[in-house]
Image (cartoon, rainbow, N blue to C red; front, side):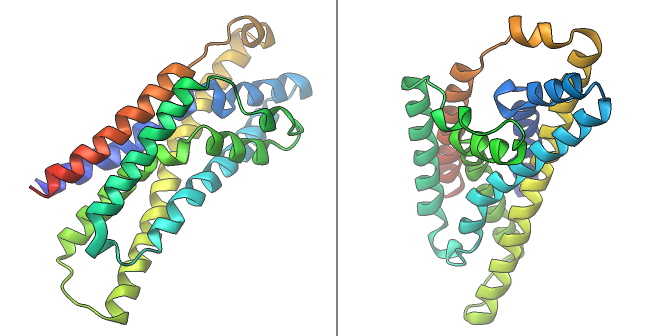
Length: 227
């Protein structure tokens, strides 16, 4: 049962990455614009790589502090519930406030890495991963049957959580970049800049609702795992 839950959570990491990649708010139109501006396909690859770097750092920015909480074993339930409530609150806020953060429009287009980091952070992309990440950590701890206490055990647990955080962020970012780059290549090859300017699709409402759903699932899975 635990292995099934663990596999489901890892698939959630991948699918959330694909979802972020499809969302134009995470930057794939900027990769298309870069290629059209420079008239070189390599520019799209470079832009996608920079966007991926910014997105990865935004994920780590959220996950890393939680990975350092070696007391996760003793307070796992409280932390996961708190994280779920935080994600729900972010989704509700984005549902009410549909305006894009002004700071994103002030970032120079050449600074794609910084823009990607700020966009992912402002839209709560990292927060969406948090309940999934904490669920993985909880199952890994359970499967390892951690019974030791003391500094050595805490250090080992913290190291494992840090590695898991980087792995979750890396897999998620790869899925995001693959999905976004695929769409960017398709748009660049067949449609061009006119498609971006006239056919922009807005996923803000779906994004906010998905945060609420993920947060609610995180809280529900926490109570389900402690029954």
